[in-house]
Length: 291
Figure 1 (spheres, helix red, strand yellow):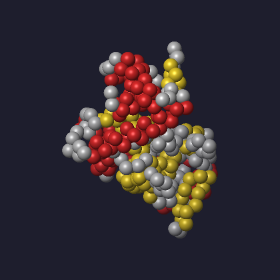
Figure 2 (tube, helix red, strand yellow):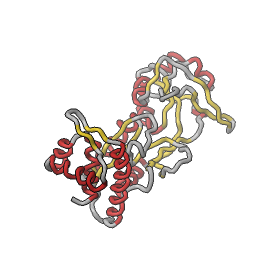
Figure 3 (cartoon, rainbow, N blue to C red):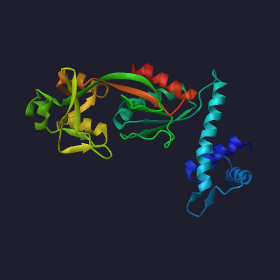
Figure 4 (cartoon, rainbow, N blue to C red):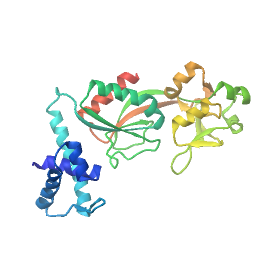
């Protein structure tokens, strides 16, 4: 077995947590998986995995090899992919996106992409927190901008305003705010973020940005749940236009304070480095469909 194949099996063992599970996934003998790990240990002169009856424990050297193995296999795949520009797309793509956008918009788009590219295997990570792309081994993340300066590569997908909205029933009971400061008298649904909830909502007047502190009896870390509370007349939310466009067209949500919109919010496709051919194809597909 060559080194690249052995490293792939080693990475699979780390992800699956079991030699036998990897063997079942790859339809090979468990002894083949064990042999690959043993060959790596013998060649490099170190113990990488300690096996017990309950679980596998990676040694310090084993953890170091995991980091290097991911880079080596990724670089090898990128090199091979570059030599097969006209071949079918194959392999895994790990995608990170917010809960609301992932469930309502990205999931059906990924289904369509995989219908066109059946060799692609997708892992979709839904989280309203900002995940570390390298640590979580994420190939592609969809993030709202503006983005902080970093080594990440980004491509703009769509752009739109962030709007204050609620159901017609809520506005009928409580009245629409005339100024952002009036939100102090409304029940605002707040995005719960690690460390601090998003209670400062951005606005702009006379070309000057400012924030207004809001409060309410509901917080959630899931954007779709916040939208559902707004639809149910439970409070006011601030959402990106592309997330509520259908609700606005259906009349189930109505905006307020449109003249105080802080500016455009961008949705970017972000990769931790040069994207693989399959990730680049997915980004192109999303840019076309979302446009």
